[in-house]
Length: 266
Image (tube, rainbow, N blue to C red; front, side, top):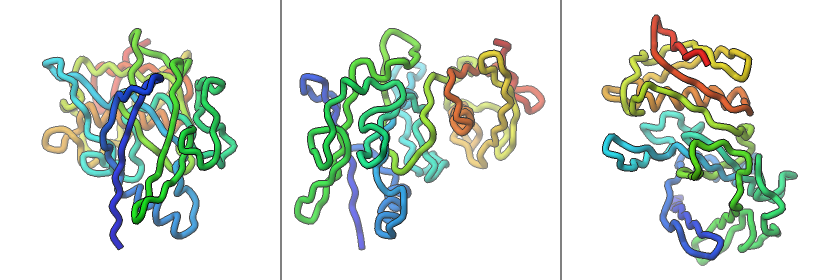
């Protein structure tokens, strides 16, 4: 049996004007698992939520916007089935069979959302449509003007530059932004960290100091497979998410000494 799966993303404003209309990347490993789970009547095979992030692009030395490679489980994304956004900052739920209200999330503006009905092609949620030998899964999500209503921003304009769908019950939503000062280095540059080695550093959360351990991968995304700042930021963000941190986290990395990342005193 051979299956062909294609993703397409259309974004419209409140007046119906199309802002984005293009194909999007599919995580082949996770998609295969969803289909296999469905056929085996196992759990976590349905679309549960949609996530939005803001670290999918960056500006190079010439000021040109560069789109990072998608986290689709294919090298240089070494996280495989654990792949996530570069930096999730907002999430809305899409499964109308869950007790969670469809098209809402942490810091959402639920009263402004349109109503959601099962098998409704026009409302928020997920529905399948059969068309001859093809089947289309239609996923609708509505972002209101003030969603998320408590997200911290770095400027007067808030921008999403990465979107992804997730199945099952994923990690606990978290709010706030993790700012990392990497001494003005670009994320493709070498950190000087060794591959496949554990490093320890402290992060100040409010008045508390938390010790975090990260282990660098055997193969980094930098030149000659070295550990880049991009790799470091992914590890830092993932460590904070795994700890279910719901506060704003500020990390200022100023240098490496004796195999220890030393943060600035906040």
